[in-house]
Image (tube, rainbow, N blue to C red; front, top):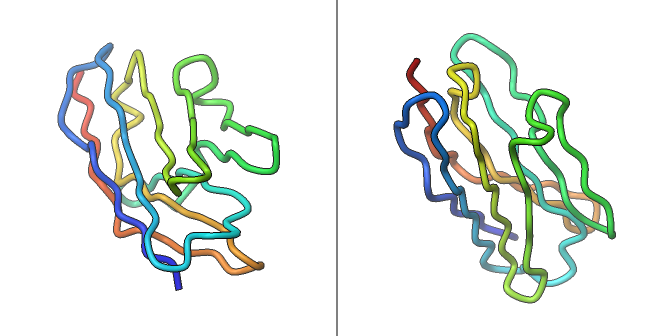
Length: 114
């Protein structure tokens, strides 16, 4: 079992920046990839960024504004978010994959006001 804990969510004005962090604990060895997803009120959860196996993937809506990074040895993943927009508002969830099973954190709330 892997436990994930996110932090860094906050309320900011449009154009501002935030840095989200996620720490894995438990069976955190052999994690193949980690990522960030978000869910806005009334909408489905969507992928924001994924990093693993030497590749990085971003959703089109955050390319050029968000940067994902990780530390495999420490089992951490971060999301640097710049030039935030009101449409970035939502609960951000950390996810990881290990031996074909995905694990989720409880989420951290990001609110961007106009």
